Image (cartoon, rainbow, N blue to C red; front, side):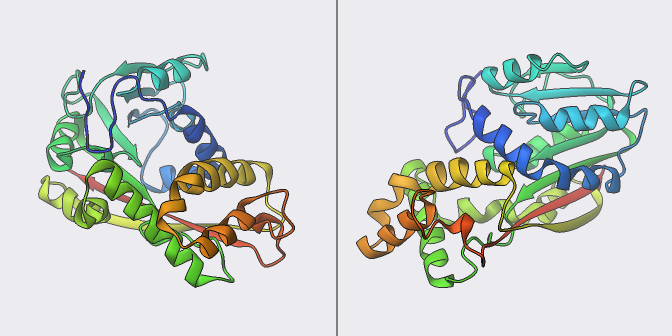
Length: 275
């Protein structure tokens, strides 16, 4: 199996720790979106891009013992992480653009924070549509259609950090601004793929200090260290990078997550459609 998309994905690439942290942080907020989108007990559901399996577990719990939950992911480490949970579900390691599944097998397809990893999202959506039974639905989820808010007290630094992250991705993967923002067009992608009754819904996941352990772990490691961290140093002025370091350092008195005015907003958009 070869890379499925523009962000360097390949069968051995491993985001497991980051995925677990995100699901611990956001999973309870996303659970209600699943049922609001039409997932019900007894359904056959596919988690397209299942990652480390936490969301697949939630989907399996909703469809219950009379339903079926199947996860598919390109990454072998992710499939192994999901299998290690030892809960009843089906697992397939595969490229989402070449799914080895039978047409008309599912009532519902959940695909979150995945479509931006594919080179031809429309073609992938058409392939997923063919897997649906009559009346079935696809639900595409994506984080951060609206920019996340980290530093409620400093819009300037937040803007500079976001711009630095975008420039890092442009340099690392050879992408331009249009490539990085195309994922925002989920409604258009669904309609171009021939899906109807396309409906978007966006929720805001909010946290204020003192934050819970799952939120701190996600922000501290997945955002402060991995998404920002040392790799942003070349893209920020020395003074701005030093300020960012102080805000992200739990040993510093200015640590953002312990400020009384800390207010974090993360948006998640779910767009549903039917063939």
